[in-house]
Length: 156
Image (cartoon, rainbow, N blue to C red; front, side, top):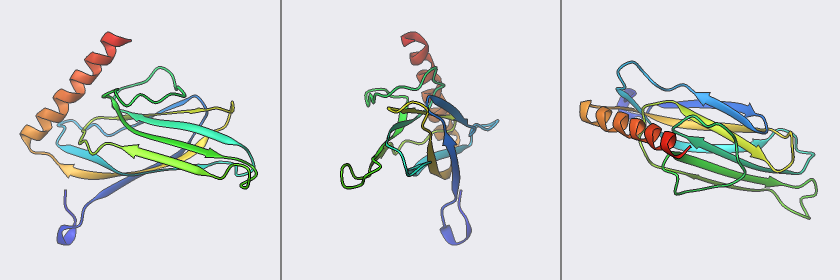
């Protein structure tokens, strides 16, 4: 999808996800002709006065639990963020690592967050580029989604 003078359309989402939280970002459409690609993912603490070690992940399929592990061999994982902070910046400065795929998808996304300190949530911000899919691109994206759901069902 294009804006005026060839500018790219960006859709943004944000929120505060609780520890052990699982949230859905609704992206699906009736005809699947709108695709999305991640262009930015950021995380920020909710409370700057506490130690935090958060693992935030974005998946293409629904998740049952939030975990404190990363597995980049999981083809349903499209983005991951790891954030650490300590009350005393001298002892353990703030650190954030973010990785995301350049993949185009046309279905919902699912965010999970697990914190090493129980009960601590984290703010997240996500930018997605909207992409108009032709029929063949739509078919490929939809078939990937169906395959991923089938793979997850078999491995659960």
